[in-house]
Amino acid sequence: MEWELLGIILTGLAALSLLVFQIPYSIPHPLGARQGRENRFDVLRGFAMVGIVLIHIHSYFQFFHPADQIVIRTTLFFSNLSRFSVPLFILTSAIFLRKKDGYWISKLKNLVLPYTLASGFGYLVKYNHYNALEFIQFYFLGKVFAPFYFVPLLIQFYLLFYLFDKLLSNKLFSKSLLLISFLLNLSSNLGFFDSILPKEYHAISILNYIFFFILGIYIGLSNEEKANQNREKSLIFGTFAILFFFFLILFSFGYFVDFKNHHLIYPIFIFFGIWELLPKFNRKISDWISFIGNNSLFIFLLHPFIIHMMHSVDPYTFGGPVIGYIVTLVLNVGIPIIIAFTIQKGKSLYRLHHSDER
Image 1 (spheres, helix red, strand yellow):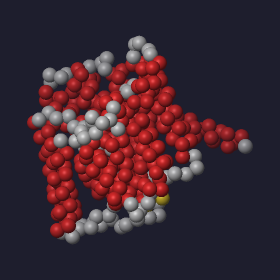
Image 2 (cartoon, one colour):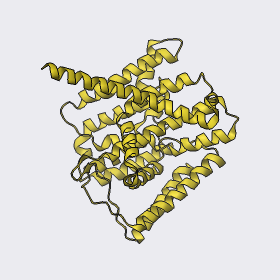
Image 3 (cartoon, one colour):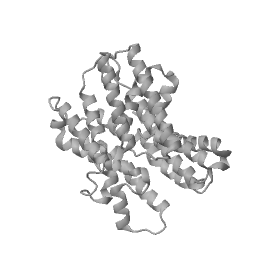
Image 4 (cartoon, one colour):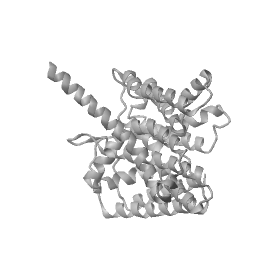
């Protein structure tokens, strides 16, 4: 609650600063002027995917070395720093969402089928006693591995859009829906719905992330505007970045608070902050992070297997806490990326072979 309230206060101050200095801010648009899809959203997803891995690495280090306070508080800092990840995935998933022919076919093929295979295999790997009813429960609640809850959550949003696309895509109601969704999300974060909703549903409740989904749709509907670059806006962003960074250190190292995934303000601040910084990124680095974003499903579904198997190995055996942290990150991102690259290369060769035969 303290972090949520702090974020709302800082956002209010930032909005007031923009108003006083009369600095307009253009909403990022999903389409480039002449380049088609804006690839910066893929870069954002890449950052989010790496962030999800960092969150789980903290749990991994805490499992082996709970008494090593300096290391654990440092991994907690990187975990808290990454708490924008799931909201950012929800937001970017909504931006390009359109109801068209094959809507559910693509979702079943590209999301549900891989999730089903990963859940089935993961259940066999992780648990010793098998129970069909337990697996069904774990499958629909995304509990086979901790991060799998994201898939049932995302499917609910896809269903919500499919049923109410005309309302959600109507520009006439977009700002009203944003306000309503913000209030619903805030109420959920404060626990107002905990006694109403079933306890098992809390982790996959769409009310925890409804604002990010509606904001994504809003951005997807926005008109393309030329970004306004000026010194005052950069100064305001820089000031509030320093403030957020300071409080991240305070909460992580001082109060030892483990943030939730669905705080409202911090993910939105990170989203707009990274958006402003992306044009200044090295092109090669941006391409690599974009590749991670494009293949995030592979990392999302395979990384839990890797981190689960690594729980039989002390991370310090890789060369101490620092090297161990880096190796853990590289393995959990790199192995799924190699698998993704191999599969994509195989598909390309297969298509090339069949085109030659014709």
